[in-house]
Length: 277
Image (cartoon, rainbow, N blue to C red):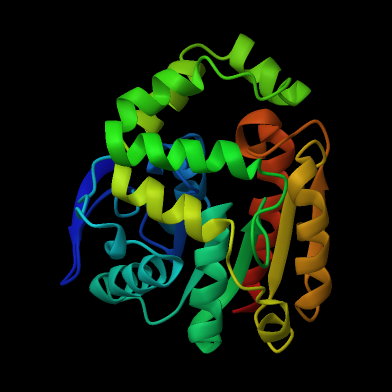
């Protein structure tokens, strides 16, 4: 695995990349990072993939455009197309996590003929559910007025209820995991945070459009990810022929919380897609 950059006419992306085979693009979630997939990049490469995981705009070490208007699900999808075109990928496989899964839905709807397979992970066909609107509005105000460092400090003091058991276990047992999550939040753009925290709570439902999607699809969700189990079930029901995999002992990031099971499910599905393509 190597860390590098891919510059498109739209943006400079920091990326992790490995392999030379079948193209696979991995899109992280809101305030996530390319390193969310780092444990598996070499494993994918060893199985014959050319895998690329970028920091999305406003995240990590990629460019941080300054205005809130520079960020939207549509903008992220256009960035993804610019990336694959810059890489010369005529067709590819796509995995999107959480907000990245919403971006992946738009990419798939744009040009389904260019996708061999699609993995939608702990995501939704429309607005995010289960979020306290008052707390979200406060977080947006803090990001706008005081920046991400202040917001991260605030998050550390706010009681949002007990974490999912698997998330609590990973935080307790994986060295550096808590610091990693904090670092991702602090390195996010405040303009991105404000724009996307607002859009994610008001996004239009894509179920009707997805009902016509002709892409081989796997929907993955952790069984403890209470706000996304229902939306994931609706996603799988909306997309013709989609498979639904519920990862036990996992919450919103099953690649960390139950990595062995996640890897078996996702790599098996994608590998079968390579054989069929």
